[in-house]
Length: 102
Image 1 (spheres, one colour):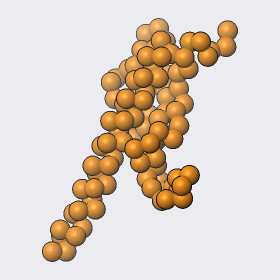
Image 2 (cartoon, one colour; image 1 turned 30 degrees about the vertical axis):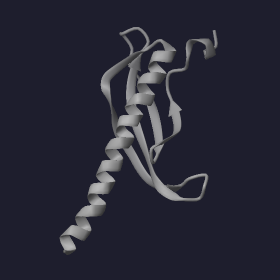
Image 3 (tube, rainbow, N blue to C red; image 1 turned 60 degrees about the vertical axis):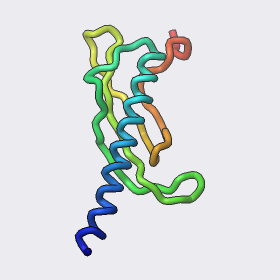
Image 4 (tube, rainbow, N blue to C red; image 1 turned 90 degrees about the vertical axis):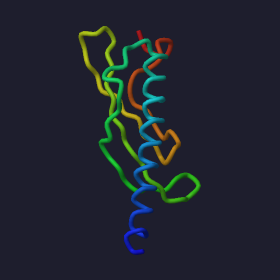
């Protein structure tokens, strides 16, 4: 019974982490598409996890996912997707072409 009580939160944490990673892939890929750059490696990598309060005051997991992109194929740049639960909390990376400064 104790093993079951310990396994349930671990499975819930793992499942929420996988859902956040899938959403981070979606957001990173979409940012690359809108910026006209190439999404590299087809994945995101978890680099940081911490507990943080949302704007509504609820405590939740904030996960930082790193991804890489290239503007021409010869360079490699890093981007970051920050997820708070299943919500996008921030994105650092490629900017849409119309928003870039010339």
